[in-house]
Amino acid sequence: MTDSPISLTPPPEGYTDWLVELKIRIHTAQQRATLAVNRELVLLYWQIGCDILTRQAEQGWGAKVIERLAQDLRAAFPEMKGFSRANLMYMRAFAEAWPDATIVQQAVGQLPWGHNLVLLTRLKDSQQRLAYAQSAITHGWSRNVLNIHIETRLLERTGKAVTNFETRLPKPQSDLARESLKDPYRLDFLGLGREAGEREIENALVKHVTEFLLELGAGFAFVGRQVLLDVGGDEFFIDLLFYHLKLRCYIVIELKGGKFKPEHLGQLGFYLTAVDRQIKSEHDNLTIGLLLCKSKNKVVAEYALGDKTQPMGIAEYKLLQCLPADLQTSLPSIEQIERELGNDGSTTGDMLE
Image 1 (tube, one colour):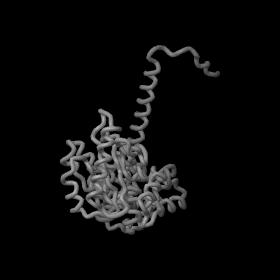
Image 2 (cartoon, one colour):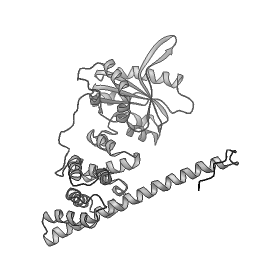
Image 3 (cartoon, helix red, strand yellow):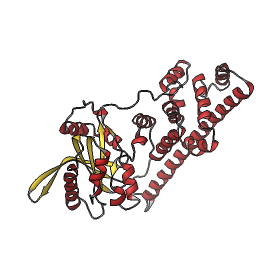
Image 4 (cartoon, one colour):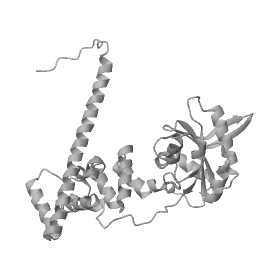
């Protein structure tokens, strides 16, 4: 028996809007179901980890019990993935890292197990782990994006630019603007040497605009480069122009190939005035300026911003990797556990996602 063909007659009034609403409700229900399953899995892993810790501490069980437990659990539940010796070690480390069940239920339990493995292997400090976990939840970071942000020390650099936002912008916009800028900006994805010039950096940034937007952070939208401003018949060009969706304002970014000088802010201020008068609409907030330079004296930068009436920030950029090489804990890497799971027949994606 076949289904009757769908009628080609127009749907009744209000049907289309109702269908859209139903699709949204179904999609939301699917997301909630997925999150609920994930929370239960993470909580189960935490409970197993707590049991292992307790029995090893109280009954003196050695490390070999984990290997035996892995064999017994896989034999009892052959359809379930994630009961390898390596993953049981992670469960133990997970329980040790988060002894408070409330944090597991309310914070890290909202993240997939693979995200929690990244936090365990890449960060040693619990407060850092929690901060990155909360940011991953807020911004919906994938595991790869979370890993990138940890490697580049995103949260440690966020809000570190020298700015005058506190006195030039109203709250809460000033706080959001300050948290939208960082210092330094990591531009080593450009593959340029330390002596690269301003135009060379600008060209590379446009070529790698996706990576640059990721480095800038959530909310930035690229408008253009070398944006023409006609002021009284004279032509001027903005290096890079962005729009920030949360701040609801344009952001002018000027690149300087050398050390910061106070006179740089005069040029930046001129561009801000021109954008406010020629591009900004009545619904947009005041344009913000960001000066990116190779180096700066923080005290000089603070002095230079002291008498400026327009909202501006000053930050450095780094063309080469400037991070400590050792971000690993004593636990095996995710790559190592993936190899082990592959060897024992488990499906990596099932456990890590």
